[in-house]
Amino acid sequence: MHFVADPATSQNPYEYYEDGALLVGSDGKVKAIGPASTIISSNYQAQVIDYSGRLIMPGFIDSHVHYPQTEMIGSFGQQLLEWLNTYTFPTEKQFSDKTYAKGVAKTFLNELMRNGTTTALVFGTVHPQSVDALFEEAQTRNMRIIAGKVMMDRNAPSWLLDTPATSYADSKALIQRWHKNGRALYAVTPRFAPTSTAAQLTEAGRLLQEYPDVYMHTHLSENKGEIAWVQELFPSSNGYLDVYNSFGLSRKRSVYAHGVHLRDDEFASLAQTQSAVAFCPTSNLFLGSGLFDLQKAEDYGVHVGLGTDVGAGTSFSALQTMNEAYKVIQLHKAYAEDPSTREPLTALKAYYLATLGAAKALDLDNKIGSFKVGNEADFIVVNPNATDLLKFRMQRATSIVDKLFVLQTLGDDRAIEKTYLMGKRQTVTTGTTGGYNYDYGYN
Ligand code: GUN
Ligand code: FE
Image 1 (cartoon, rainbow, N blue to C red):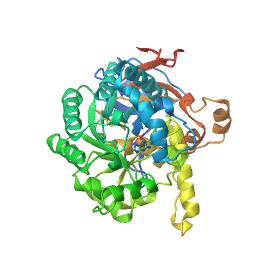
Image 2 (image 1 turned 180 degrees about the vertical axis):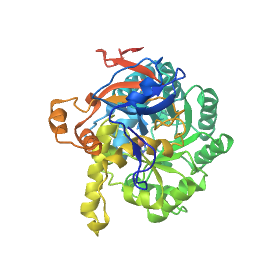
Image 3 (image 1 turned 90 degrees about the horizontal axis):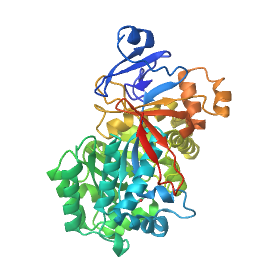
């Protein structure tokens, strides 16, 4: 099962074969999909792996996540700005030590694999070596990862600050080392407007000018206190997005996490610049940030992908992220002036946002996110009956769409039976000492 179009605008957004097969070439790319009998009989030389009773889908894409925050997921009691000062900044300090960073990168990538997430757009820390550590680990697995070094030169502890000049030079060196090195892609990553001076945002814009095909990744309009603070720090700006726009940061491959409190003119601007928004429901609920207006983003034609935003997000699971996204949209209806204008989030749209929709948001739909012939064969094998409750409930699910909805509501990493990167099955063996003793190999 995979998507060929957006369920919001297409009558036939997906292809599903009840007894289907995915044919992968020796180059790790998709050669064909179709009915199993046809694929197998016309490719008699191919090795056949039988996953009867399972669902084969493209791997999930996480449009926004912080790998250094893996160890602080589920930290109690604060909203965004206090949460950053209390938990996040002290945690990120440790990533000046590359060996430490490598250990966390391993744990993080293992969690992605376990949850069926085959690509992610990832924040490092301010330390360039944190990004080297992640890319090196991703490369040993041949995993498509987009990441960048955080740029921040104010409003954080001194031990986490760079300068406009060092952030430019360090980011540039990382771009030259990693962008398009194997499957790695680079994202210029100013943390958010409050932690960058105008001089630093100017340098971020300069990098995008010099390297037009890299990504831009930051946070936008997540929390009301944050938005007010941005207005104080940039008093002549016309709102939060205008700050980024004025430094040339909005264009294709620009990804803004959250966008919970965007104004209508800001949605219009995002559409016009072809920027994307990462919808991070578990994070927006956990930090009490608010309810992202997916329907408005759709109306304005803004590209949206689903993000976990771990460690403010509470799960690495795309399924659980869809589950919470559904509830956010339910609350939108409940609080709408005219609830009759509000539609529930369908299962099809939810899976689309975690696969082809995210790939489009990341300008990668010619490589990942669907089983289009020639795409990289990053895929998962899902067991819809992975738990007793799933099995019990699935008996009542009659259509594939019903099954997908039950799976997102009740499923998590237990339902992800296998994860493949470019046609190669990945195995993750959980270790015991501090979580960093993971044994990792190919099968
Ligand atoms: N805004 C700036 N930094 C962060 C972060 O680390 N997490 C979240 N959720 N929002 C941010
Ligand atoms: Fe974030």
